[in-house]
Length: 179
Length: 347
Image (cartoon, rainbow over all chains, first blue to last red):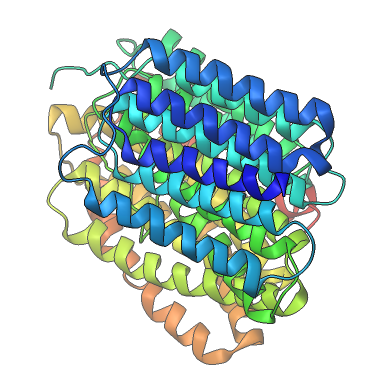
């Protein structure tokens, strides 16, 4: 039951990143996604890996909370396609993770597939630096959580995912050079 | 670390050294050394990490590093294609690791092929390209510097992740992508207006050959892919760097050196590209002879684009001329006697 709730939280967090254009919404989405992904990865990642994911997500969220366009910016005008993407992407990941794939860890599969898919789509569709960096940070956390599906992942992928998420959000945006 | 990756890494380091030693005096050597060295370290990390997931996370860091360099494209534009690549590769890894119908593993094969193309900036995921952008911040960095090692790591990772049937599907995806990139890249290198864009498309065409080599899943295919990547890293990349100065001065010349450069770029004998093409055609004939026929026909498309690129080199002078001569000599040596190169990669 805890895993199911964590998977839902992860999807909700990534959906917030997809649906938000401002720093508060993006920060909350990052935090929720990290917490949810850590929750579903807990059985395989162990306490250290889980803690790393939560800490990485928290630091990335804190950074996003202090930089980027102000406000919440959730569901701005014209965001209906993104809302449909979140719902349809979640349903597709749920169907594939539960009905098509077999074996243990359905919640982990759902959370990783929806996290990677939605964060990748957000990175592809965004023209704003802070949004793209946030999407990349969530993508790194989801990739790290996906390592729990492999045999004997160890703690390194989770530490690396957390480090990547922090590095992405703290990296400077590209300096535009005049033509 | 894979022997192939070690060799490709060494080639990338050598290409960086050539660029630093033989670039014109007015070029920003220190910046290239720092940024190229950091890129090389990141590439080495991709090859050195023990798992596929860690390689993807290093790829994320490399993309963010490149997006932070001084350039002309906005950060979000720089992160698009690497983001798609990481997402596709990560999804493919999930599909490859779980149980389920055989179709799931075939989806994983498609995802790995598509993710590789997106990471490199090949069709159907061409990165946004600005010819005026510094090389380290441009998509050429992915195509010619990071790409070869990355491709070796992803192909090896795919072989570890996929079962045999899906491995064959992965090979088919690579061959399909390879033929499309060969045809599109060589035609675009010939017909596009800008010389800078023509050089980029010529890299795309060469990558088509390399993907076909990887996809053949025969020893000859892997050998051909390695030789093509040698020509990309130690042939096309240094020649492209040399041509950028001529491009700025808008110089177009038709001298013997331009013809030699065109021959090297077209993969004619005795350059390394010729040996690569022979191996590729031999491997394709062993696998399915009509494929060899298609490849041979598409290979003819290299000629007009290469003549154009050769002319765009201008007349190299001073230390740049020495650099071009060294690159051509290396390509002749690898073309005439590729065995040390192949033995180094245990192929």
